[in-house]
Length: 493
Image 1 (spheres, one colour):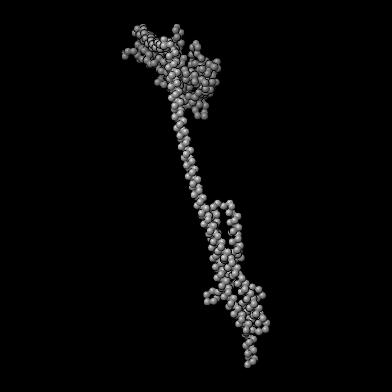
Image 2 (image 1 turned 90 degrees about the vertical axis):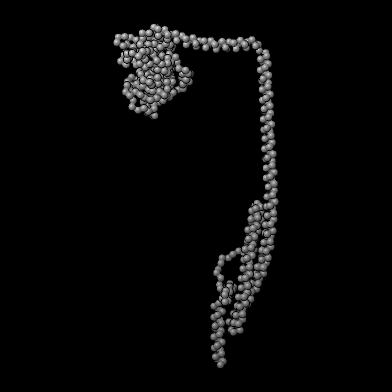
């Protein structure tokens, strides 16, 4: 019996030693953290990275708040306080969780101590000493756990104080915000009122200045009227009456002179008609620059002049000058013809008929001032259409540019140059001396020997201005620019 009992005791000792050495590491000097799950199952928690303590977090947040308190606005400070309050609530929750974990540790340590007491009663020798040492370590862990709980309670009390402080600070911050808002609103309202007062003062000042200006203007008008009245009183009325009479006489003389000129023209026409009663033809058209003169029959049975020989002349007193190239029934006067009579001779079956203008060719109104304005420019451009080139009809009817400059004449189409020549004795420029309805708008231009064009302008005024301008520039270059076989009249410039 004794032997059997001894063997049983040895087996129990071996089982107890194996159980303690497998679950508890007494050499490490610390007891592992366990949690008790459902059905009293011991669950080893996952290892988490070491988190800072609650005191360190609170100290860090407090330092940051104190550091930023001077430079943050009231609104930002309130936001910071709210964040601190939420952090304090989170820390409070964490402390509750730690408290629950500490209770679990107490229960675990109590169960472990009970197991070690039972084991100490069953073992002997060295194993018993190990069991007692484990019991002492468990008691030391319990003491440490109690101290930790005290620290946690102290930290919990500090967290509650900090939360209370933060709540009070948030309330104070909200009050400060409301006060600042009310102050800002009051300042805005006062600023608006000040701006409104300034605007009203400016409007009042503007109204007063306008009224003062109006009053000054009225006074100035009165002074001017008074000055005029005084001036009229001091001027002799006899002289004023004579001035009015002289002005009226000047107007009457001008009207009479115009009437006399018209009567002289009518008288000359009547004399011409009496002298040429036997003449079968007459000239039709305005006797002025920019028009066309046409030979028309005076009576219906007059013979057709389509196949007759026709010549046009310029006459001035006893001088008679042939217009070279003018051999059609239509002739458009050009600037050379101003101040001269135009005469056409018709030869029909060895019979000679002569028709002459009743008065010299009149200049175009405003043409002289227009040309004088163009002379001031270094170059003038005219839009033209080339109708003939070297005697052949020009197929293209596109717009060309006729440049009349101080030193040369140039004809261009876009970027291409058709002709460009300086003023010389070989250059000729005159009005077109052939027939056609567009003769009053066309010119003949010989750039050089073997190259000549017939150009049509946009209007009669542009055509005559181009001729006068080119002759003016050519004269400045000591060149007489005229038509074929023309001689410059006396005084042409």
